[in-house]
Length: 128
Ligand code: HEC
Ligand code: HEC
Ligand code: HEC
Ligand code: HEC
Image 1 (cartoon, rainbow, N blue to C red):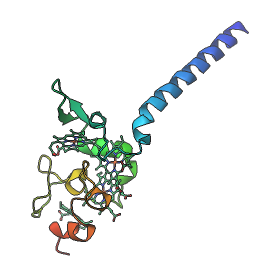
Image 2 (tube, helix red, strand yellow; image 1 turned 30 degrees about the vertical axis):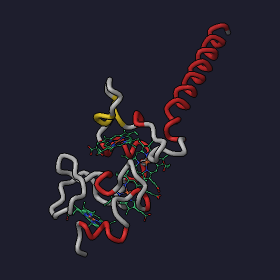
Image 3 (cartoon, rainbow, N blue to C red; image 1 turned 90 degrees about the vertical axis):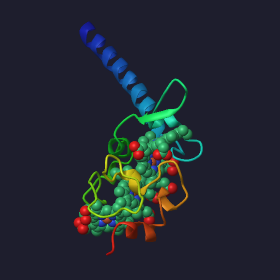
Image 4 (cartoon, helix red, strand yellow; image 1 turned 120 degrees about the vertical axis):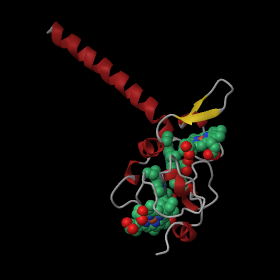
């Protein structure tokens, strides 16, 4: 009986700690604004001693899909490939197109933080 009681106590402590851990992790996901003017650089960047944002904490696709998991699916645009066409100045990372080729994670100038108006964006790379 005592063993069971101890076990239950352990389980409830474990659950309590898990809940703490989960709510801790998901704080960033619940923020009203991640990308706007009040964004916390450390959500995505490693910060150096001079308080500058240097590298990213994860490769871009992992970083973005960590919070936007539905954006990596067969129905979504191809990602992490080296385009065969001219990209008209859109940024590539290690010559590959990523989420930030089309989206600017710092700015909300265009709809859905795109780098151009949706009607113009596709035509920077395609001539359908
Ligand atoms: C920590 C979680 C988190 C990470 C990491 C993250 N996002 Fe987001 N994203 C959000 C949240 C929350 C919103 C909605 C609130 C906002 O706009 O800030 C959002 C909104 C967006 C939107 C829609 C904005 C709009 O105005 O409609 C786009 C596009 C987007 N994110 C792309 C990205 C890309 C690209 C990356 C990787 C560079 C990324 N996100 C990384 C949490 C995240
Ligand atoms: C939602 C994720 C996210 C947040 C939050 C974020 N950044 Fe970035 N940042 C990126 C990504 C992705 C890149 C592109 C890196 C690449 O192309 O290799 C980037 C690039 C940069 C660069 C390189 C120059 C450039 O514009 O491409 C600087 C400087 C920078 N960020 C500073 C900041 C600062 C300062 C903050 C806080 C105010 C911040 N970032 C917040 C995702 C983020
Ligand atoms: C080829 C360009 C392109 C690439 C690459 C791309 N997106 Fe998008 N994304 C778009 C377009 C276009 C929309 C739709 C905007 C609209 O609503 O008209 C969109 C929409 C979104 C939205 C929803 C915005 C909203 O208002 O609901 C999110 C979040 C998002 N993308 C995240 C990502 C992430 C994360 C990646 C990388 C895995 C990615 N995107 C790669 C072009 C792109
Ligand atoms: C940065 C350049 C770039 C942008 C911007 C871009 N695409 Fe693409 N797209 C590609 C690449 C690269 C492929 C992979 C096939 C290839 O290399 O031709 C592709 C493939 C496709 C395909 C699959 C058909 C095929 O040829 O395999 C469709 C459909 C498509 N894109 C639609 C769009 C739409 C719609 C937009 C605008 C929301 C858009 N693309 C924006 C680069 C881009």
